[in-house]
Image (cartoon, rainbow, N blue to C red; front, side, top):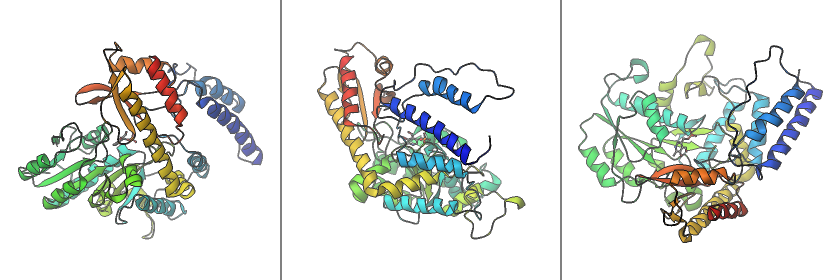
Length: 454
Ligand SMILES: Cc1ncc(COP(=O)(O)O)c(C=O)c1O
């Protein structure tokens, strides 16, 4: 097969069929597939025809996918892909740019413009620079290695070059996301290297007095504080104004994981729950969550881009660029990089700030509707007032003789909803996270009926 206008037509016709059947099914299919195992097919020697490929996709792949792109997939924190971002993502594949060293295309400049727009969307200072990553986990890894370079600099060690054998550092956090802990391991600090700081009562947010005491009592030469805005279960926000003041006093690096919680800034502005994030040294954002662009799209921002570059610098004669090139390959994990900024660029330019705010507001309102129903229901216990988009609940054992895990399994097996577990104040619970632009009020009612019928 070669590309020609005929081929394009054939691809588009086939694509249209796949898209129509996928989207038509999305509202009706089971939210989670019951068949999780790929058909056992031998690797063909001569390959199959394009028509056969399409039949295979239509019969064996599509029907067994989840409806994670639809309105009732409420597990983890899962965004859908909005239509404009979906379209832009097809173009990304068609353009197939390698946004690595620059100097050959406008793509790097678009990535930079999109980063600036994100700062403007969230009213962050433009002193934040950064890079698009594969997700929030990769952004948290970049945070760990940039903080590592910073504390190395404090101790006269260029860690990227010499390693961290002699590094003397303490890391403090209250409720870091699991991906942050993973990142501490990947960055060489160790997954168990961080010192837990107590939380406020009935909250996952950091107790500021406990942090102050820990920093004052810390004899390590350097300090890193990892804050959350918001935590993935309780959607609790650390007090970033107070934390940033303490970090300044103790010369500590402040990283804020704001993967999805940053979107609260569109509702409450700069004096809301994220107030103080502007004082961070680095921030993680995640566009494939609440911005609703296709997967493979996180963002790392830092005010110390030269430290990020020092950590990720890659040089070889064949990679040499000019001074005016934007060296994304020296600012992140990968050398070769997808043009993943483009769906974000297209989303921002098409929906604008107000369009994005609308779908955030809608999810928050829908989560509140669900929480209010659960609160009144005799079958369930609402565990925490819902202030954002995540609802925490469990079965009421007086009415439902099920553990939370059993309850999740039963609810998910109806095909009407997909929920995932969590832990709240040490107890297994059920989480419902609403972050899909296409979730309708009818979807919420459908899930409420399913919950009620259990
Ligand atoms: C606060 C927070 N940080 C990081 C992550 C990891 O994101 P990703 O799966 O995009 O790597 C998540 C995912 O839910 C999150 O909620």
